[in-house]
Image (cartoon, rainbow over the protein chains, first blue to last red):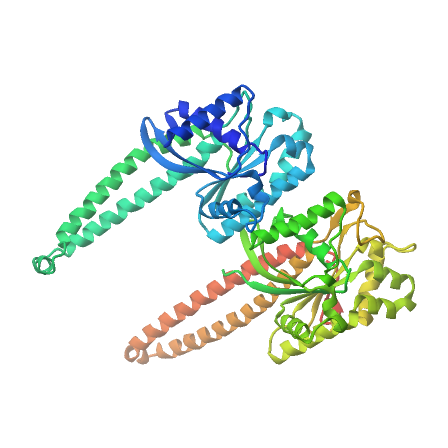
Length: 294
Length: 346
C-alpha cells in the first residue's frame, strides 16, 4: 500500500480484512498470526463505531492467506507503510528505504488517495500525483514484469460524487497515471471509490482485484510446470536404456527411468494444484466481471 | 529497444533562474504532462527537488542563487507513460562557474570536459535582462556582461570544435529565456519581443546560428513575479509555462541524429544484400546452378539474414520517427534554428 499520511490505508486494511474474514462468495482471508487477526478485527470494530486506528508509525507486514471454499489458494503478505514514508528521504528514516524496496518487490501496488482532500485541497492532488514518481521508478527498475496497480480513492462518503464538478476534481489528479497504465502492455489498473467509515462501501473490490492477478499468476505458473514436467518425463524416458541404467548404478545416481517417474509425479502434483486453482479463478472472474479495468 | 543515455548541461549566469526552472520542470513532469513523466533515479533527489518547489509554492521563497553552492548533478528518467524514452545525466552548473574570477582551474577543466561530452546544452538567459536591452539597445554591453553571453558562447564553441575533431555530432542547444513574462514591454507583447530576441541572438549568441547547430529558443516562466525575481514572491502569481519543452527538444534532436544514423545503416545493409543477390543471380545461370548449388544455398541464407536485419532496422526507425512526430507536436510554433536558418513555423 502506497499513500500519503491520512489517506486511510490502515483503516482500509482493517475493514477489508474484517469483511473478507467473514467470507465473500466462498473466499476468505485469514491472518497467520492470531495477534494480527485480533488487531485487525478490533480496529474494524472500532471504525464501525467511529473510532479510527492510530496512524501507522512504522512499516507493518501482515502474513495473510486467501482461501476458497475452505482450501488455501494464495498466501500473501500485505505491507502497510507509514504515510510519511512516501514523502521522506531514505537517508533520514529506515522505513523509507523499506517502502522503495517493497515497491520493487511487490506483486501488486495499491495506491491511496484521500477523496475528500482531492476535492478540497489542490496540494493533496499534487501530493497524490507525486506518488506516481515512486511507482514509475519502481516499475522502470523491474522491467516488463506484469504488475497490477489499484488506485483507491478513500473517504468517498464525505464527498458528493453525483456532482460532476466534484467528480472531475477527483478524476483530474489520477488522469495522467490512468492514461499511462492504459497505454502500458504490462501494467494493469483499476480505480476504485471506497468508503471506510462506520458504513463501509466497496472495500472488498480493490483487494480481490489485486489477489485475482496473484491467483492468475499461480495458474499460469502451474500450467507451465505441468508442461515442463511432462516434457522432462518424456525426454528422460527416451534416454532410459539398459546401458544408461548400468552407468547410473555404477555412478550411484538415479536412472533416467527413475527421473522420468519423478517428473511424471511432479506433473501430476502440478496438474492437481492447477485443477484446484481453476474454480477460484472462475469465481473471481464472475465476481469482478463488472469492475472496470484499464 | 535500449533506452538511450543523454548527457545534458545547463549553463547560465547567477540569478538567471536555472534552479527555479529545474524545480518547476521537475514538479510538472513528475506528476505527468501530456503523457510524459520524469523521475529521478535516486528517490532522495526527488524529495530535495520537491521540498525546494514546495517552499516556493507555500512560502513564495525562491531558491537561493547557486553561486555560493555547488554545481548539482541529477540522474533523471524521462518516459512516455511507463515507456522509458531516455535517461538523462543532468548537470546544473552554479552561476559562478562561467566566471573565471570565482572559478578554479580544476573547475574550468571539469566544465570543459562536461561540455565536450554533452549531447544537449541549455543556455539560460534572464528574460528581465533581455527586456532591458530591448528597451534600450545601448544597454547591449551591460546585458552581455550580466548574462555572461560571451563566456557561454566561448564554452559552446570550444565544445563544438572538440566534438568536430572527434567526429562526434554537435550538441543540441536550448536557449531558455526565463521570466519570459518580463519580455513584455510598453509597445510589444511577449511574442513580438521573442521574435526580436531570436533575430538578435545573431549578435548576442552567434554560436546558436552556427552551421551544424540545431537550437530551440524556449521562453519559460514559473510565475508572474515581476522584477522581484529573488527572495520572496507572491505565491498567487505562480503560473508555470513551457518548462517541459527543453527536455522534449533535447530528446527529439537526439533521436533525429539516431534516425540519420539508422538510415546510413539501412543503406549499408541494403548494399550488402544487393551484392549477394547479384552474386546469387550469377550462380543461378545455366550449368553454374548445378555446380555451385551448395554455395548458392549459403548465399540465400546470408540474404535472408540481411533481410531480417533491414526489417528490424526499419522497425526501429519507424518507432523513432513516430516518437519524433509526437515530440514535435509539443514544440509547435517554437523557433528552431537549424544550420543558421530559422525554421518556418509549423
